[in-house]
Image 1 (cartoon, helix red, strand yellow):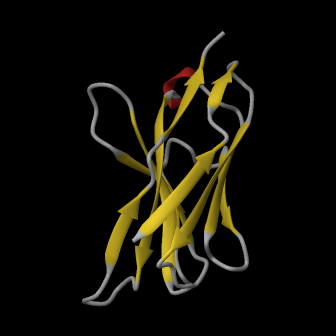
Image 2 (tube, rainbow, N blue to C red):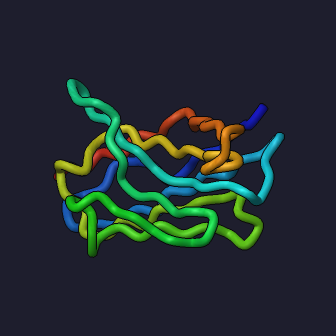
Length: 120
C-alpha cells in the first residue's frame, strides 16, 4: 500500500504562485515515476506534469513556462511550482506515483487531491 500527503493548495490571485508537494510513503521504491494531474468540474482528469525515473520532465502545453515539476533525491516526494497562475488553472490537483514503470508489474497510485483556486 502507498499513502500520500499532499499539501500546498489554496486560494491565490491571478498572477500569483503556489507550490504543491506530495510525499509518498509505505511500499514505495525509488524505481518510480511521479507527476500531477488536475480535474475541474465537468472535465476529465488531465496530465499537468510528470517526471520519469531518469528525471525527464513533461508538461501540458497550457502550463509550459509557468509550472515546474521536481522531486527529492529519495524519489518519494514530488513538487509542482506554479507561477503566473490563471483562473483556468483552478482545479483539484492529484499527484500520482507509478511503481516499477515500464514493466509488467507497473502500478499507479493516486493521491487524495488538493484544491487550487485562482480568483481575484
